[in-house]
Length: 217
Image (tube, rainbow, N blue to C red; front, side):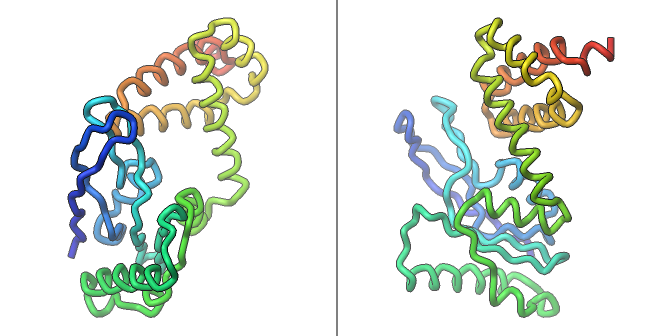
């Protein structure tokens, strides 16, 4: 059966507004394949303040399950500062919850020994590595995302933006603009309209400054 999210009250750390958000304790991509992409895009267990627009993924513990790869990961954020006994109780609770929701033929041994992950970045790496995406590929993607952030920081300074585009001319390739498009879609889906507008403006400007943009004219 599908695992329903729970509704929690969240307090915005920026403006203090209290609002509700859906939080998933069990993310089972066997029942809901779309959850995998949503998680990797930062759209699950995500809370955006309706008042000031601040937000992002919450450091909320959950169990990720992909039965096709016999992959079970428990995300226990470092900042929870749990005692060992509390950690084990939480892991047991999540394990029991997913076992109760699966048909008997899917209750396999690997679910009793889920991998424990302390950082969200590491969790996403393990999910992608199970798909055959190498660490080198992940590092290349991480470098593209860092470059996007660098461009965003200079987006209001035309001369600085042009200088950066010239400096990173070889990096403004098809894969880079794919990453910009994915970041733009994630911002829109997460309700971060201001960020989406900045990314759209940045993409238009960088296309004009890149060899890829010039070659398509």
